[in-house]
Image 1 (tube, rainbow, N blue to C red):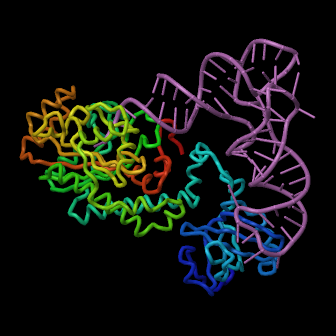
Image 2 (image 1 turned 180 degrees about the vertical axis):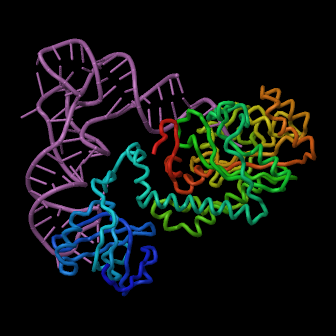
Image 3 (image 1 turned 120 degrees about the vertical axis):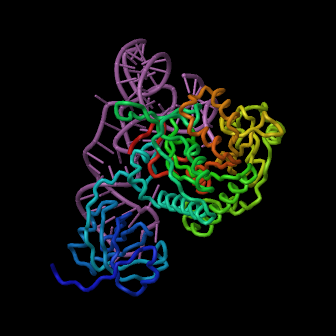
Length: 437
RNA sequence: UCCUCAGUAGCUCAAUUGGCAGAGCAUCCGGCUGUUAACCGGAGGGUUGUUGGUUCGAGUCCAACCUGAGGAGCCA
C-alpha cells in the first residue's frame, strides 16, 4: 500500500461546508458528459448529487481514458477540491484530482431517457436509485417517523400483533393461506385490530404498525396486496375520541413533512398548497349527510352501501380538506362495529377521506363492547365462534367502551407525494400481477 | 369476473390506403476544454406477443389465445 495523506470523506448533501477543501466522495456515476479533454461526471451518493469536473491535464491520460468508459451507475470514489460554481447544477462542483473505480457497471438498464412503468417495476431494485424514488422513500420514512413520534408522545405503547393468524379477523375479505407445518393452515394478517383490543385492555392505549395482507384481486391505483398500516386502539374511548385522534394524527404527519421535506416535495413537483390547507378541525359529516351531498352533486347513490371510488372522490372534491365521514350503515361495516344507540341501523364507524381523489386513508370506529350483542354478530356473520372465543372473552372480563382505527401508510404517502399510484409509495410493491423483485 | 386499451431493436416510440422494418436513447468506434437528459459523424442491433386465416403481398385486415396496463367489482 502506498502512503496517502489523510482524506476527508464528505457527503454530497453537506458539501457546502467543504468549499475550498479537498474531499473524497464515494458514490455512483449518475451521468457523464464529455468534451474531448474535459469530463463532467454527475456523482450521487445517496445524500445528493454533484457535478465533478475532470480535465485531462489535471488527472493524466490513464485516469482520463478510464473515465471515458465508465458506465452509468459505476461505483466510484473521487478526490478533489470543492468549489462553488454557478454553472453547475446544485451550485457546487468538485475538481477531480483522483478517481478510483470501486465497482464497474456496464449496460445499466435504466437510461436517462424515459421508461414504461412495467419496465421500471421489473427493475425496481435499480429504479430506487433515481432522484424521484429517493424523494418518495425519504418522505415515506418521515411519515412513519412522524406516526411513531405522534403515538409515543401521547402515551401509546407499541404492541406488536401477529402476522401469522389462525383465521380471518373478519369473514369478509380474502386472505393469503400459508401452510403451517403439516397440521394446519395459517393466514397472513389483514389487520392487527382484534389483538389490539386485547392489548388495549392490558395497557390502555396501544398501537401496532406492520405489514398487512389482502388477497383481493383489485387492480386499481389505490390497492396493494401487501401494505403497511398503523392501528391505534384506546380503552375507555368513544367515537368522538377516535375521530379526534385520527384528525390529530393526519395533521401531525402533514405538518412534519411540510417542516422537513420541502426539497423532496420539490423534486416530485408536488404543489404543497393543498397540504398547507390541512388543519384541524376537518369537516365532519354523517353518512346521511354524505349521501345528500352525493345526490346533490348528481351521483346516483342509494342509502345503505359503502362508498365506491367515484363517490369518495366526489365527496373529497366537495371540501378542500380531509373529510371525516361517520356513522355508516351497520350492514356496510364489519361485525365488531358498535351500533349507534340512537339509530341501530347505523354504526359508530368513521372513515377519513383524503383530498384530491386519494380516497380513504383512515377507517375505524367504536367497537361493540357488549358480550351478548357481539356473540350474536359473530353468529349472524357465520363466523366460527370457537375461533373468536378469546375475542369474546374481552367482553366477559371487564369490558369497557373502546375504539381505534387503521391508517394505510402507502395511501397517505401517495397523497402527500401526489403519486398516480400507491405502487411507488412502497419500496417493493406487491400487486395482483407482481411479486418480483 | 366484466369493460376499455396496449404489445415493433436492450429501452421509449414511429411506420400514410395493405406495398423496401425506421428514429431517439443505450452500446461500440471517431471528434470536441464548460457540458446541463451535452453535441457532431459512423457502426452493430428485428421470429413486429403466439397460432391460424384473408391476400400477389400483412407490423397494418380477421379469429382465437397469451401477457400487461387503466377502470369497475371487491376492498375498515
